[in-house]
Length: 639
Ligand code: PRX
Picture 1 (cartoon, rainbow, N blue to C red):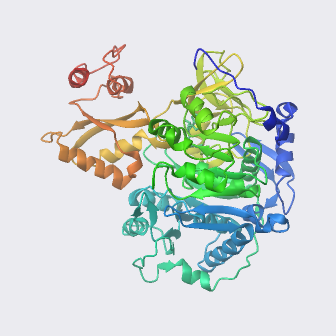
Picture 2 (picture 1 turned 135 degrees about the vertical axis):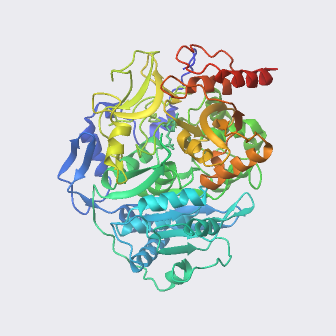
Picture 3 (picture 1 turned 30 degrees about the vertical axis):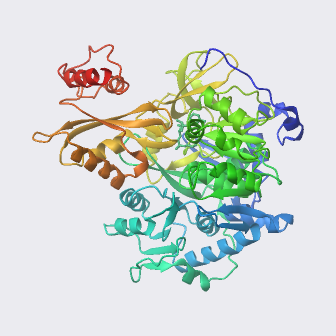
């Protein structure tokens, strides 16, 4: 929390036209608020009870029946939006494609019919391993149309990471594509799939979309080209009425153990929370051109690329690539080309832009922008100010939105016409959300004190459970306090005005460019190498990525820290998890600092990795010799 806080009042022209501008909304009873929001969706059958709360298990809108794809598509077809652009896709090579709501309806129905023919059913999760293309959204919606939960695996995950997620979900059907364009290269998507499926797995059918005009090798009886399946599929597929509490999807996220957690979201609650936050936080109107740069493989892509905009009948831009390909003008070029009005992106992207210089955004006309958003990591006041000034031309409110895979929807955020902004703070809970910064006892901290983010009342888009693991769900999120409060795993402070300032994770999770990576996941992967006796990973601050992992390694006897070994370890991480989680530095030591009970003292490792030779209190250290190599390393580094 900075000493001097600047406050930006909501700009009057913005306030005058905003969708949510009545401050009393913050005083409304939470359940009444959410009922009103749920009524903004279309239900086949009304719910009987808004919330059934059996801590920590919640059932939202019990008795209600609805369908996600119906709400995202069909309900717009009886309106003028029928031929409105839903997705404007821009490929890396400048190829473009527009899907109207009517187009989406046809394609989703066809894909749903294909899935039905392949035997998809609501008791089985369909895994989707695809890049940033509209067909990924179509595949997701096709699943929801027939009531089948999907599990989207980020395209940057390796074959092994994909395999683990397929098997955990027990998927029999995998939807993928023959490749993807990334930074001018073709990503080996289908090759990864084949590599994954060489090992023991649950998959019976692989459906392959065409993205890169290459004929993939097909395994007879298992692999099918989507184009041929689609050819015989009907354009109509009735949406299946689902119970509000039925699972909509599973999304794996890193946790504090080596095994990723399958976060399960329900249908009615999730859609209600996402539709409302999308509409009111982004002030999303019919004439907006909305662009969320998140990948569909993460929760931001699920909630605010796939579901949120379509539930609201919006027009969105979807871009296949990153901000530096084909050159560093690309995102600004896209904003100018389509007249983007709302841009939702990450602090990592913003820090990159700052590093590259103002000339890139300044070359393009960004005057269409009227609202900016940030998600995934804390944004520093400096980066916030830059984003506001250079990209937003000083006129666009910024919504710094705090939330998680588990919360499903934005929890802490300004409502742009109601909340004065302070750069670096995600401000306050959204109406209907009860979240606070709590101390060890579960009481709100005083201004300036540090605490943990907790959610003190259930919220509609909350995770239902962890896939087939209720016990882990209870233990991970609901045991921090004696009260039925959700523990988010983030540290924060609160200021005199009740504004929340997020400090980052307090558990063994590293946030690299907004991607969550469990230190245990990295450690267990490194430990697979024959040379490694012990590994401990921690996150250190990084100028662009927010955090990067540093690994401390103890090698087995007769092994030495050579470049070949380091290369092999990099390779292992890429193979087992994915390139995006690469270790930034390896530090070799004869021993890790431990307590009497054998627990690694991570605080010391943190100091070493940050180049700090003051180890603080080392009275609990059982093996003082362990500091020798670490001191040597620091000595060399500080020279
Ligand atoms: O540490 C917080 C950080 O991202 C974590 C959640 O990661 P994930 O489940 O992958 O979802 C990311 C996209 C919603 C949180 O525990 N985080 C997310 N948004 C913010 C943030 N940290 C600070 N400010 C934010 N706005």
